[in-house]
Length: 417
Image (cartoon, rainbow, N blue to C red; front, top):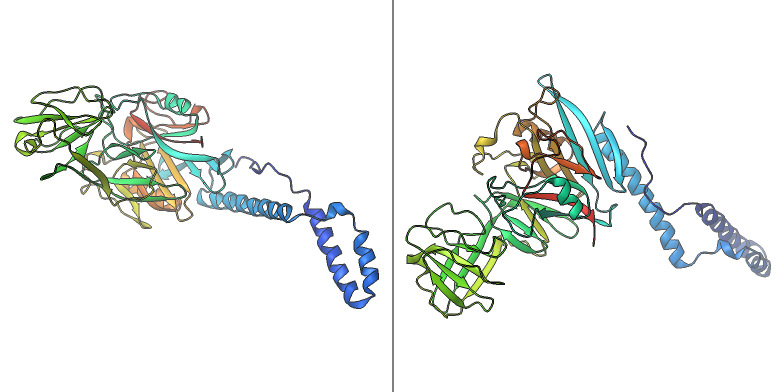
């Protein structure tokens, strides 16, 4: 194991002073009860003033001791979780772990990031996009650098031809895309994480009618779906389904255009696309209301990133490939995963595969690994050729394309702004 670096910047040299101070006060108390009080007063008066600490200094010193203890425990816990691994401190509270495990006698190279948000208080985790428009792709190194991030791992699935993320994606409380097949997603809060299958709960309404919205900024799966497109999708809406219609809604929530074909997406507005038989209840010039939330309604959630299938659910291995319509991604492959421990440490994993020195993992093997390192909830991310992990300026795994293919999105850890 590499030599661990102590993270706290402050020194603990004043602990000796505290000890002397405590012993001195104890002596004073004894003298006050046994000898003449005047003698005790003179004794106290002669103690050097630099041994006395203000209440704030005492709190700071206790905080330093607590921090040192937390760092030691984190070091010990990580060492136990990853026996035989090479473990390095990226910064205080963020460790990069590299190891090789054997499955059926074949080697598998694994890179792990363990992020302790209680120690790395100046750092946060969030999803990022390749561009301010959804149809875009970029290398993970560029995404990390543009977002001043130390750590990056490829994120959710995306449409290869365009780069549009497939599944729920929220960044800084803004919902960019809706769920696909109600797949599992990670909710990122200020101080903790949650994981569950997510559904969209959205409607558009006027005074008399309420129409369900099936998805946001996602490719059409059924001709009967009603979909909403914002300028995050681009400047123009996609084509209508057969017998479909499009409603352009401006920034004042007024229907500004009705068309059977694609239209320009209004600035600060959106376009509703769906069957004419469903949307004909809305008229030109009419004001409408849109209501969008998720099920569950994650209050105070800051970011959401979806994946699938589940790997660990409530502390137990749980691989629901069929339920999340992901049966096609079985077999041994390069893998990416994300999960969190009981202590709310975040775990990011990249598994190399499809090469002699690392054959990859099945989803069940990945689930077993995530549970073995303490995850109480974990999910699979996009894998295969997309699997790539970036640490402090370098791609640390061995993706099939050097540096990794261009990606739609990533999950990053960087300094709080």
